[in-house]
Amino acid sequence: MKTPIVICLFASVVSLAAAQVAAPAAREEFLARAELLRPTTLDEARARFPEPINPFFGPPPPSPSVTEAEAAAGQTAAAAPAAPPPVTIDDLTADLRPSGIMELSGIPFLMFGESRLREGDTLTVRYRGNNYDLQVVRLETRRYVLRWNDQTVTKTLQN
Image (cartoon, rainbow, N blue to C red; front, side, top):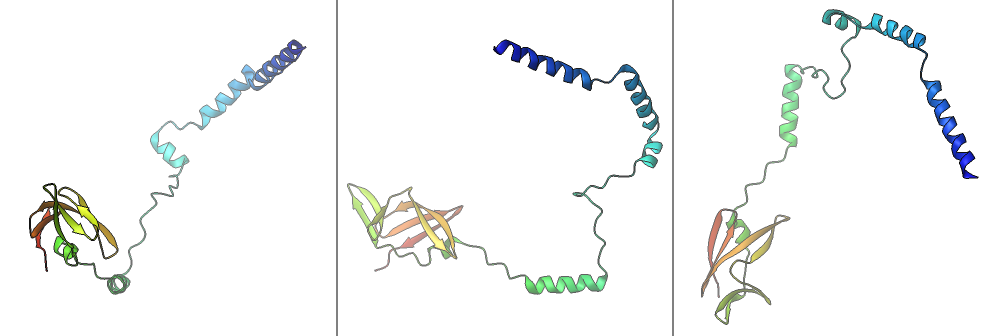
């Protein structure tokens, strides 16, 4: 039952493939027309086929006149907000108020309420809407050292 269906399907595929192959005379005629269209020199190709339009790399926009450029520079200078000053570790640690330094089993901990940080831990500080990770470098009895990027600061506990 399936064999006649397979044979019919195979015969239709073969006939479609044979129908799409052009006769040799038609192919020769097509190739002759294509050969006439092919340019022989670079100048002939440039004359026949203009430069294509590239939407990504078009010609540069015309430069504005001096008065327009001056006006645009004045508007951008007035519209652009001043850049914020660079952030330093002193800025990040200015409002830092640890509750103390505690030692458990010989290991010192920097205390912030109930949270404890030991040497090597990171402390996340929020400054001007951004989070910064400070590393606890060293803990002593009344002092602690924090590092951010290549900046370090030594802070003393306040009573």
